[in-house]
Image (cartoon, rainbow, N blue to C red):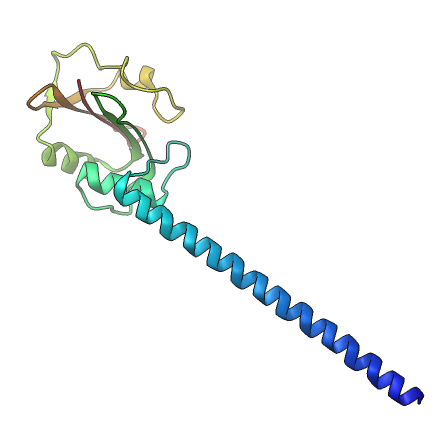
Length: 173
């Protein structure tokens, strides 16, 4: 009789442990599935309304926006990619800040047909937004490379050789 109670107790304990394991595995599976669904839905939404991460560098969305706008390959020297968009209303502006070497900076200048601009004195700071990664006082001291397209469409690019930091501003008015 004692042996039967003892065996029954062990079987009961093992059943509880097994049920807890199954419950935990089920919970883990549910959490993984939920994360995958959220990631996939973000990817889907990103195709319709592109996502910019202004407060976190090097996210997959920032890397995608970098490729979309800068149109150069993401090489190992490109780091700390921050970006922001303000595309509400009749005008739009896009800001990018990142570290890169001078070779990448030259590729961007060539790709976008940017020219050294000593005539522009208004860097459109009034249109730009304030972020820790977008230092207007520092930018103001750098050489401006610019391009102007049709219908008041502009591209501005600044590169700090010392810090190997680039700033790219794409906007229309």
